[in-house]
Length: 319
Ligand code: ADP
Ligand code: MG
Image 1 (cartoon, rainbow, N blue to C red):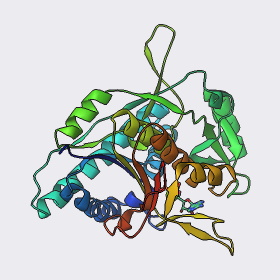
Image 2 (image 1 turned 45 degrees about the vertical axis):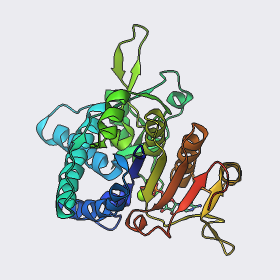
Image 3 (image 1 turned 30 degrees about the vertical axis):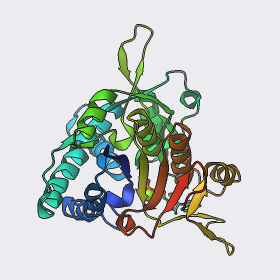
């Protein structure tokens, strides 16, 4: 029998919890605990591709960039380079932690991280409406100066009075580089880490040259595209809630454990899933099913091994 192929997307909390400052010890500990939960998939014979978020990490890279420029006149690097840096750093960390977890379980597998470019459409409508907030909080004066100097766009920060954040577009991913290599490596039994942070954003110009895009790509949408393109059977999104809910945080809140495509789409359109957090995950799960994937699962990173948790989306209801 052919081994099943699963893509597992590690969300924010899987690597770094909101109440932590982000030391390497904290990140390694969280990563290790998360990866421990993937052992049962390996024991069930799954081949694995891991994707991951990079929100806090790339945020820190952008701030270091900014501080470096202020203090030492070091040239700032564009967003694509920052994402590539974060893929390398986080990917390496996941790789090393995974090797140690595998070793403890007596499993012998290669783990490899691939710095992955994800292609967006240069004409995506997101380019005319940048929404994604990145980097540090600036004062109005600083923001004006950066706008003048670099053409960056800013929006008022909701959480900090008088604060401004840089905003960049978040176009949808349309293609991923090196798909056959990612698929082959995974099907040979290697654990592949790819498309971290939604991927290094690039687009093709008129001459078909690859160009960097100053954007960030949603990691759930990129992970789902990757899962579809490599022909994965199952797609797991690990985040900080054990289930998805309708009427979330309202008195009539309801856990949804088994969902079909049609009902999930209806709940999405009814606004049950918050924009920027759960909505893109649901969209990602639905895209995967629509493109022929068998099952999408959303659950807490630390609950995966315990199969009684998690919301499972399939084309038709399936228990
Ligand atoms: P990650 O960092 O793992 O990508 P996000 O913070 O972006 O995760 O998204 C997960 C969050 O989505 C949860 O912490 C939860 O508060 C929020 N959320 C919004 N709507 C829902 C819903 N209907 N059901 C479950 N969680 C929801
Ligand atoms: Mg989060």
